[in-house]
Every structure is written in structure tokens, then in C-alpha cells.
Length: 187
Image: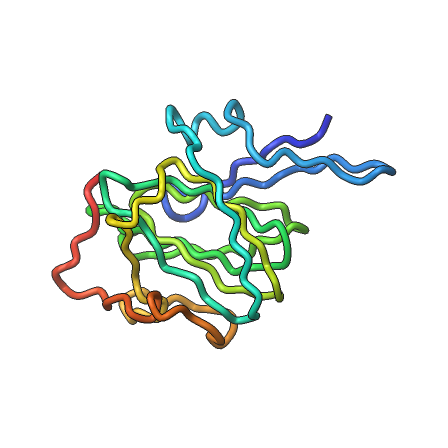
């Protein structure tokens, strides 16, 4: 039966894309969303401890760039279940050759891709279609005392958003810009 997961490396070490090979017949389609065995080389001994669903209604809205500080750093596995989003991950790992570099990927049900974002990265997305829904699988529980964020338009990142920003939470707009003292995270 179909449903195999194809792991694709990105230009940033440890940040991977997973492509799903759906199985379709006259009844509809079947897709494997997650398989510990197929993803073991990426996930290792981590466990999925929380699954969240986010719906964003406004095209052009941005959510992010979010992360959790140690000891609550988390790996996120992100899929778009409805609509389309421009998904972005930023490398914040100290001493990484891709420190402060970002990778983006369109996620949609049609392309059946999942971004696997390891600890030490910030994550955010922009909505490309109304009422887009994102499924997040997390390897750590949400810890509000350990949450952090980067400004979506930080000049040190120069993230290229595909659309003008139409909506942003007050919290996300208030994240500080990266200054010269930021050295990244040691994991």
C-alpha cells in the first residue's frame, strides 16, 4: 500500500522536508502523516508529546517566528492540512555554519510536504490561501515561560515573504530585533 515517506535534505543541516507518497483509488486517497519507523533516523528517541492545529483566516497573515528556550527546546513536524502556507525555519544554533540562515517551503495538501524543524530553530509561516490550517507535532510540551521569538522583518534575517504582511499579532510585532550580542543557542 502507498503512504511511504520520502526524506529530503535542505541546505541547512538537520532541517528536512518529508514528502508523502499518497495512495489513490476510486474511493479517494490515503496518506501516511507520521511513521516513527520511517522517521527514526531524524527523530531518534524523541517522542511526539503534543499535537496542535492552527487556522489562520487572512491571506498574507504571518505567525512567527517562534521557538522555545532550553530546557524546553522542541522539534516541530509541520504540515498544512487546508489551504497553502509559506513555511519558514531559521537556524539559531550557535556555531552552526548556517547560523541565522533560513529555509522556506510552500506547504499544502496538494504537495503533501512536511517540514521537520529541529531544536535550535525559529519557525513561522505566511498564509497564502484563506482559512489555511497547519498541523504541528511537538516533541516538547508548550512552556509559556520559555517561549521566544524573532521579528518577522528582522534585517539580520531578511526573510523574503511572498506577500505583503496583512495581519500580525501584537506579540509577534513586538519581538526584539537581533543585536550583536545574540550568539545563538548551544544544544
